Length: 357
Image (cartoon, rainbow, N blue to C red):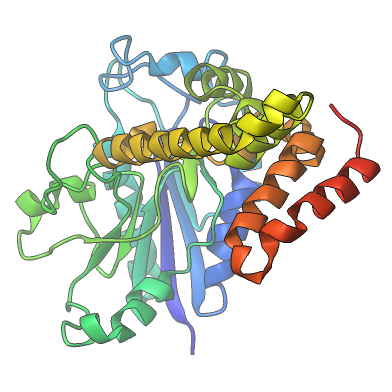
């Protein structure tokens, strides 16, 4: 017999038209085998807002230039109902400068509670999240609720009688990671307890419940999806382009060095030192990047496929530079199998087939 799962969507609808398909394919479908799923929605009568937490100070309204204070029309409301097929939905007006998360979460909790009473049911699990999240990876709840606790080192702990699993933005803007305040946990959480407030308030609400952080993260498994035009601009300004990222791959840099320095005798003689220098420099860059991300996960680069020029950038993987670099890396990794001996034969073969870009 299937368990019962209530999915509670709260807050502003924002970019739901762009995110719904990913929500359906990565949240609904993976859990439909083990759960009967009901959806409840509490939202506001505008797409986006400049509120107490979303105001000019954080400039978040710039991510939704055509949506801020734009009213939902009948078409929008019907579209939301047709897409999500909620058991209950409530749309209210957001007060000026109100940070609506608490009222919206309270509202969606009430909708679920009403439905439980009307149909004399209890949900085994409640998942709370937002409609503007774009999911890249499957979120299968039983992987955490059941399978994770089969691990030898967790088996003896067992799952608490009351539990909340939550995403966590690592350290956020803090220097410590205190389990009593999981940063970023207001984006998505699930468990067998209905919280009145987001998980970062859980210690004050019920100190007996310790949030369990899951390996499912912002910018790796999902993102907050901005309005397309502004999202693309933000990606470019904050993270450059997909082309630039591929050109920064070690294989591309090594291939470029091989091409440039193969045009003279001096270049050929210098190649071992140039290659060593590139590898050392690349490793230092990677080490510095990991250090920065560990200190502040918000600095993590988003998945390559989210970049506006992703499809164009993929062509760089067909460039001679990239292919040469891959051959060189493979040769060094398989040196004990004669990789270095075969290297120049592989390069000549590739040059005969390729066109220099």
